[in-house]
Amino acid sequence: MSFLDRFRRGGGRMRRPARNAARTGSTRVRAADDTDVAHLADFIATRRGVEGFVEPRTAVSDVTLLLVAHDGEWTRRRVPSVQWAHRFCNDHMTPSYDAAVVGIPQRMRDYNRRRKQQGS
Figure 1 (cartoon, helix red, strand yellow):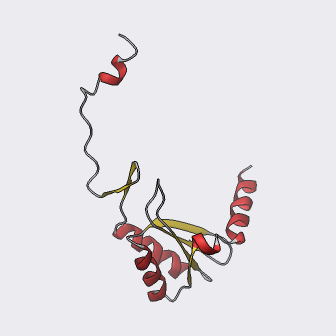
Figure 2 (cartoon, rainbow, N blue to C red; figure 1 turned 90 degrees about the horizontal axis):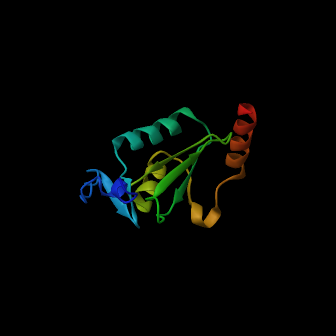
Figure 3 (cartoon, rainbow, N blue to C red; figure 1 turned 135 degrees about the vertical axis):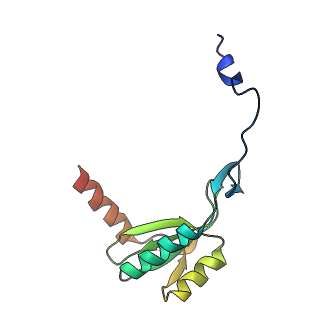
């Protein structure tokens, strides 16, 4: 068996992309679905002081909504569009910001640091 035979095993056929995959740049990512929306709504309902940070599409990911609670706990999920993310936050009476403009809050980085120290 030669080195190149490892790459020929698939018979030269390309795999079909997943049904709910969205095309972004040179990669395929899973599109937002109802499970993502339910998770975001649950996060807002069970935490206090939540703010939304809408992250724009990049070469490797679709538009995402980053929710950060008062203590820095956070979650991030894909969303259909920037407009949808802002509307979702407005519907849930949660302030939303463009992450590309304001960045991410320091309390989120502090939360990640605390979690890392606890794990050590």
